[in-house]
Length: 332
Image (cartoon, rainbow, N blue to C red):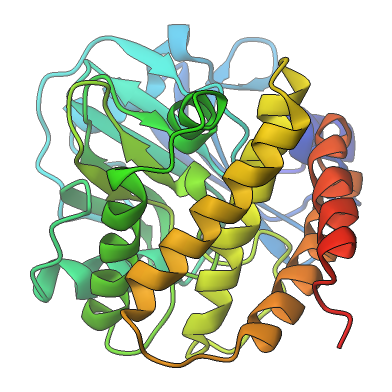
């Protein structure tokens, strides 16, 4: 099968379509039924994944199409494999928050995260390691779907009412709340690092932390690493700490955008950061100047990410860079 570059673009989420550079002559069609399935197509030496529906042409499946529910309710197409047990699923809704991959909630019971690119999965390996080591801050992994050894999608237990930190943490920032939740977040991070046997999350920020309104429990998700595809030292746990602290600046930028007092929010950022670091390190010495230097590097990376994928997000790293310069971060 041959797909033009234009057809390939239509099979990707809108914010990722510029990754397609050429036509595809390697296309694998894993049919669920006559009108839907999963396409894997090669473009520029990457194999992209697209759950699809087919009429006159192929289109990326939307929640109303029910393709994820069909996939979980039937034996997998030949060529795909999984440890997930098929059930009887009907209703879908899409997670609308910006993600490198795409997540679908099915029957408010499970969440299917479709990978953008088929590859060996760091996320799957880390989730398996965390589960094996008894880490409790992880939505239960129900199974992964593979094409040979390349991850296609992961299936986790869905947590009803859970919101990521771009909602719950922003709300706390607006209230000036740097309370018990900060210590809970530090404990999650510390236990995660212990359970990963020295590895790191790779892209740790409040957007990867879930919380419900009626509980103090936190869950961490999405261990795929750097969304720009830049491989860093997997053993550099200080990078995770820096990444989380950077996200407090982003939360502050969002709160200010929606009307919070700038002076109050700046104070909240520093109070939250200091409390998080104190709880994580528990009095142990660490190199604060090195941490701040990593934060500045990550913030420059965040601006690069916004320029490439999310132009409307530029205001957050721009605020953070300005405030870090004001604080003297990375100036040594």
